[in-house]
Length: 127
Image 1 (tube, rainbow, N blue to C red):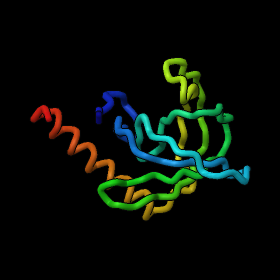
Image 2 (cartoon, one colour):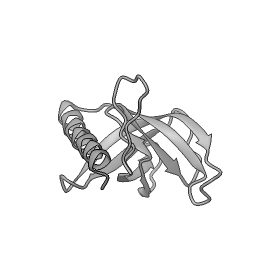
Image 3 (cartoon, rainbow, N blue to C red):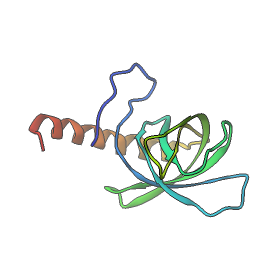
Image 4 (cartoon, rainbow, N blue to C red):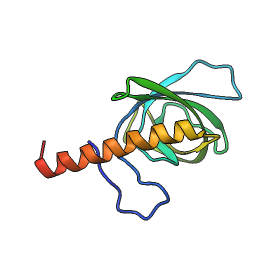
């Protein structure tokens, strides 16, 4: 379900579950699959199977379903919390996008605006 946050933030957060994969840039590991809990133009909150370290730089591949594209972005782990309610993903972390280019920023912003409009329509028409 998509929800809008009422907090005052630099970027509007969208509580949409988007498919994504990630890997730590400093390690030669394969991408691991996950999803977003919420996402904004500045970052993403997502669950993890293994505890990430604050300060780690991750490579994210975010699936934009409407666009039928995947975006590759870098993000820095800002905070990490235990997520005891989810046994398959026992950690949750907040990531801040870094080194995001103008093209990627525009594509992500347009996609999030689309999700916001869709959320408002779903809420208004209750579908």
